[in-house]
Amino acid sequence: DDTGDGETGTVTKTRSKTARPPLYKVLLLNDDFTPMEFVVHILERFFGLNHAQAFEIMLTVHKKGLAVVGVFSHEIAETKVTQVMDFARQHQHPLQCTMEKE
Ligand code: TYC
Image (cartoon, rainbow, N blue to C red; front, side, top):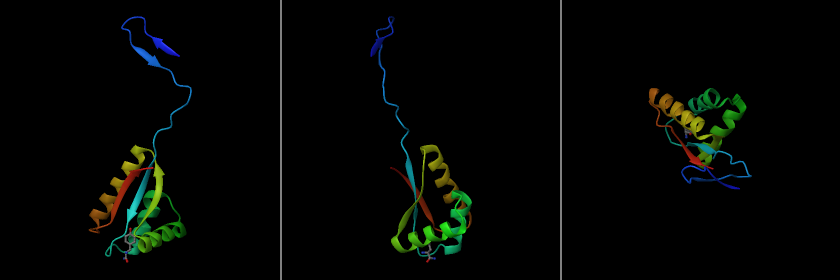
């Protein structure tokens, strides 16, 4: 299944398996200053969680230091991180949000 283009000698390998795009975990980090209600609001607003789910994840971050709040394509994960960081900065909270390849 190696094909030449009959022109430039370029050889292209065809693949039988479909590659899935890599996924990225969006992580929320604990700090001592950001109010709990503000974190809950962020989780509801930007991650579509209901109040109970948002409160639960906020408490996990508070107790364990960090938690995965969602898994997304690179572009969507980057957008979420930017939205959270911008909103936290606007409200002068030191909340940190980051992403890592799954
Ligand atoms: N630790 C913060 C407090 O006690 C609450 C908090 C939770 C902050 C989650 C950040 O990502 C966070 N007010």
